[in-house]
Amino acid sequence: MKKTLSVIMLGLLPGFAMAAEEHGGHHGGHQGHDMASMNQKMQGVGQPGKAADVSRTIEVMMGDDMRFSPAHIEVKAGETVRFFVKNAGKLEHELVIGNAEALLEHAEMMRQMPDMHHAEPNMISLQGGQMGGLVWQFDQAGTVDFACLLPGHMEAGMKGSIQVM
Image (tube, rainbow, N blue to C red; front, side, top):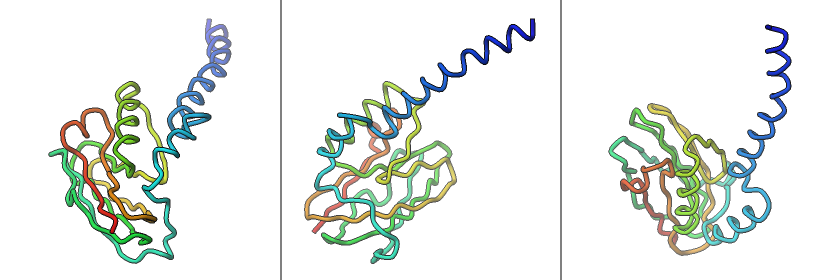
């Protein structure tokens, strides 16, 4: 009986691996046309920065009150900023930089797949009590948004804006 169960489990492993790859590929890397669509929506937001180019550090607190502090930030066009992000709450939170359209689309994907985990250069996800950093270069003037895209968090008010001057 144990041998039969082992054979069945080993036979299922490739299917689990493919399912995990599909899940990760769909969200983690936005494969195929999704990536091109997301890149187009992210234009004007900036790009990952280099630590050597950081001109200043901005501390951002995330809390279980579903707020960022500060919720409004000002930077200069061309500036590379390090965000030192602290999750002061007990719940998991994330800070994702993007434009409003891309953030709303991504939040909808998160609602459809709430157990999804991802790691992109424009975001940081932290468990309660954790701290981390994110380096971003803002390439042109305008408004850039940020939000926590975990289901229900952005809708509860966990969002903010960056004015690029």
